[in-house]
Length: 151
Ligand SMILES: [Fe+2]
Image 1 (tube, rainbow, N blue to C red):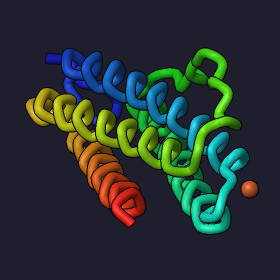
Image 2: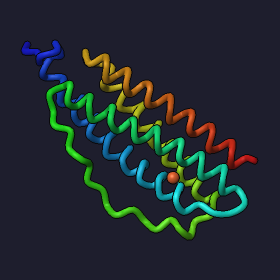
Image 3: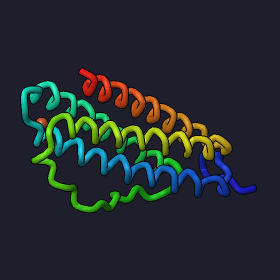
Image 4: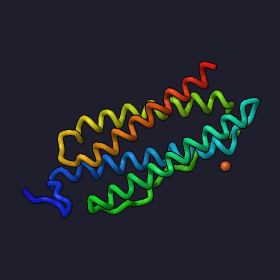
């Protein structure tokens, strides 16, 4: 069995690489959407939603850095994710933005949980921990966004 420079069996690294690359691309899309909502939100709850979306895109920005740097630690390239042009969000209501972000964070939580089931079978404990922390944050964002929608 061969291992990489930090001791992880090389036959396990493909899963870490594809998991991190997929997650990075999805988080980048969510980051772009959240930033656009921060810019374009309007209505009676403008200040609160503007600040909430800023908090979320700042977290997504830091997260992308962590995911890309984990790829580098494992010996891979951290390519900038290619995404399609973001859709026009200027006509959406604040509630529609909240509901859309909630659906996105729910989808991320579900896909990360599925990825963890696979990657937890490997020796890449640090990626497992990064994914678990990321899952916890997405779950927290789901709670915050759904609480706003209930108000
Ligand atoms: Fe801003």
